[in-house]
Length: 129
Image (tube, rainbow, N blue to C red; front, side, top):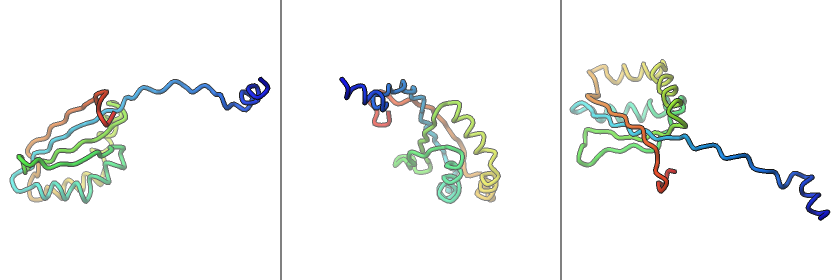
């Protein structure tokens, strides 16, 4: 009994706070490059976008080129919440370095013809949960 009281006194049996709910979500973005512009799009991501994303809390999960749609870039980002995603995207879009990089990459015309964005919650059985 004396040992138990000593442990309690030392705070070794502290009650853990309730776990915060996991509000993170994932965003899949699909970029359809203009004909012959996929290399320019990839260069913009490699040389500028990834670094600027990180500065604004846009966490990169992966980047993919579909085998059946070679003029397409698909990527997945992780966000702490939908509200954080909105805030971080706004900050990214207003970043002066991004504006300069985008303008330079489009000096010979637009490199994208279409974009899509889908916000997703992982399932309970997902490896990303």
